[in-house]
Length: 341
Image (cartoon, rainbow, N blue to C red; front, side):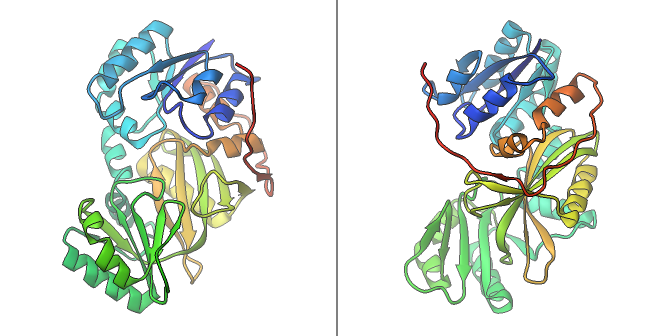
C-alpha cells in the first residue's frame, strides 16, 4: 500500500484526480486529503480527510506531520504555491519526523519559481528565451514602461511577481475601446482606464512585472522530472486561454518539448510541475510562468492516457517507467457529475 497526502482538496477538478488515483492499476493507494475548509467536495473521494490551517499559517506544518505519522504517509503532494514554500522551508523537520517524500522543489528553487521576475532572470542567465520584460517597483517607472511597450507592440501586460491563475493580471491594449472586460481573472482595458482606475490596486501588489503581449492560445506543459531529467512532457492547448479547466487538446509541439527539457535541466527538477507558455507574433515561444507543483488541470493529461501520478509514485518507489505513446490530438473536456454519499 502506498499512502499519499494531497493538499487543496477543494480544487475544482479534485474529484476526478482522486478517482484516478484510487483506480490505479499499478499501485494500491490510500488517499489522505487536506484543506483549510471543511466543506470541500474532494473529501468525499478520499479515504481520509482533515481540515488543516492555511499553508501560510502557524500550525500548518505540525498538522501535516501529525497526519503523516498517523497514516504512515509515503508522499506529500502540495497543490498550491504557498504550501510548496512552507513545506520546502521545513523540509528537514518533515523528513526527519516522517517517512514521507516531499514532492516539491528545494526552498531556493521554490522561491525562484514562485516569483515571475526571478524566474525570467534565472532563465535569461541560462540562455533560455524570455519575453521582453521589466521588474518595476514604483508606479512612474511602470507607466513609462507600459507606454514604451504600447509603442513597440500595441500592448502591454502587467502582473504581480507573485501570483497564480491570472490573478492581478492587466492586459493593456493600445486600441481597446469601452469599459474594461474581465476574461477569467484577467482584466483587459486601455492605458487611460488602467492608470485612472487601477493604480492603487497595482501599487498594493508591487513589485510587478511589465512585459510584452503574447498571442493566444495559452499552452500548458506537464513536466514529470527526476534529478533534472524530464521523464514525461505533455503539452496541452487550452480551449480558453483564461480558464485552464475549460478543456484541452493534447499535442506534442517539438519546440515546447525542447523548452520543457531545458527548464527541467536548468532547475534540476524532481517531481511533477506545470508550465504556461505562449508564442509571440514572430513565432517565438516564451514562458508565462512555472508552477512549482502539479497544476489542478494535470488531471487532463491523466484522463487522456498519460499516467503522470502513477509514474510519479513509481519514481518515488524507485521503479523504472515504461515507454508510452503520447495520445496526440485527444480532446479532453470537463463536465459536471453526481454521486450519492
